Length: 107
Image (tube, rainbow, N blue to C red; front, side, top):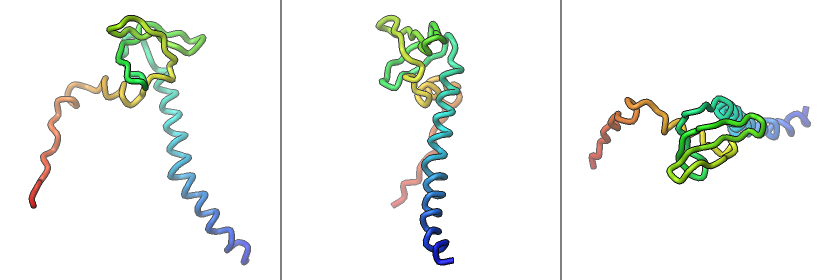
């Protein structure tokens, strides 16, 4: 009985770490893989380094894509494309034009 009481805090810490750190990271990795797999020609994307462009070709054999930018055509790995920035870029116009809620600045 005493050994169970001694291990309980460690088990509780592991459970908390799993649900607040490990599980969300695994979920995010799955979303990023799904996003990279669903890329198609014509999608506007932003790379993790900040390069904006449009997908013009996808290569499944080496998991890369060719992006057309103002500077020309550049080949990137699909994993180098930022999921967050690309989804913000492709957000519907209604979301972009929405006015932010007014803040009450009473002092």
